[in-house]
View: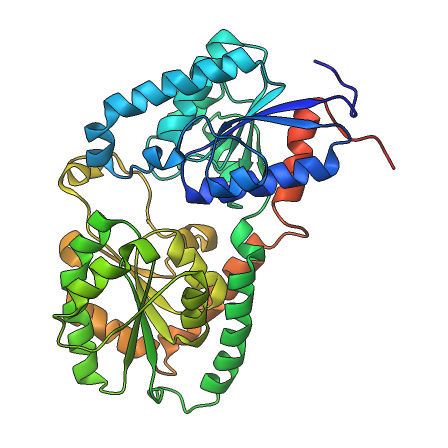
Length: 402
């Protein structure tokens, strides 16, 4: 490997979904800024990585499969793409391979590439959730991954205890996301005004977000319960305003479903509308996932709900995590109430939301915990900066001193 920092860097990078595509784009951009020579790209990504210069080997949306049922149904296609991607990277003989999230795809590619190119350094950006289930993956990963770039502060110690590869916490892109920062600033002002109210007093014209998930199967399982929750909450608090932020591709279907609701709901789509809704919300009920971390970073008290698909229910016994909520993991204690499957009871959730839309002890304690979450995740620079430095160091392309 050429250690000259001005020599070309051939970077292989693979992302399997939108969040990974954004991380990949930030990483490529930062590497181009820091590396003194040209950067050549090969791999798989989406629109963001395309804007950063990657010509994807195929449309990465083929990999947008979530849940046990979906993975099994599309396994032949997944295996075909794994072989195709691995062969393309082996043929390219890059200086380093970075795999980003989507472990069902990216780690299988990495293992195949490692078998053919055992001296090629491999970096895993976004640690697999070994802290939630299948912890044995950590030690297995050490056989083909040189380093893990972590986006959560608790992961390094956890993976080390399991015997996994070295882990460096680089930060999470949400902590510097302009939408998050803007909504958080608005929430800080709103929080100041709300805290001046008498303790226990219900807010005037409160706003409740309903976030049923970004995948069709996910929100179809949750919406009936969320409809009943909204109806119950509207009876208890007639001035409550309900907003459902969604993606443009789901908007029409969601509007058709919600047209039959007894409660008025506003449906907004797109990133700008989402962050505007976050900036005025008093509370939220959300499908378990990254959105809970967004709510915590912005400062919106919330409740987590989820209904698993039938095959996922069959393997629940293999889940080792004490929680499914990222803010709970980061705080290391139960901050957000979680309701899964049959425990998603509309009457109970409505009453919890009623407490969170008043100047209650529950609301104050959750907001204080969210402050702890933000402090734990805080870094001095965007995640792409330390991540890119580590990639260049491991690829032996460290920039020369200024």
